[in-house]
Image 1 (tube, helix red, strand yellow):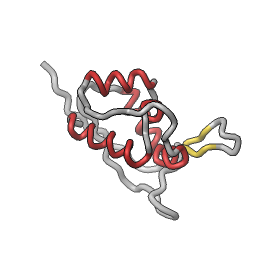
Image 2: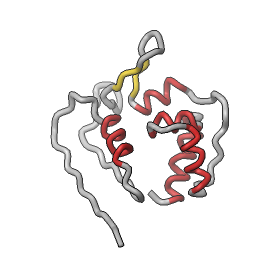
Image 3: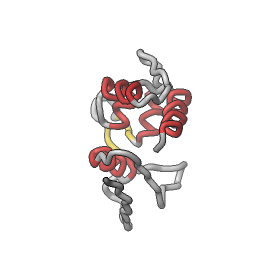
Length: 128
């Protein structure tokens, strides 16, 4: 994803959910300082607020995480578009340095472990 696309996507998440470095770290399974450093080093052009503005219920729903009653452990849930509807296909694109952990995390977020079907992975790898 190009810098402008990254900016637009992350800014949308900030505006829609109140996302901050901690919530992005949860999304990318990283830590908040790494997220802040990436945004600064790559000149993404968004400002992340410190503090707790995140709408946790909506953010967890976006990430496909269901909080338990006590708020301790969370479990992944099958992604539902709306009541009674389920994702039947998806396209995920990554550009830049290939981070296997990030790709695996996105697949885990998308599929709950009970999904059945076919997965095709197509890569275009550039090199010197």
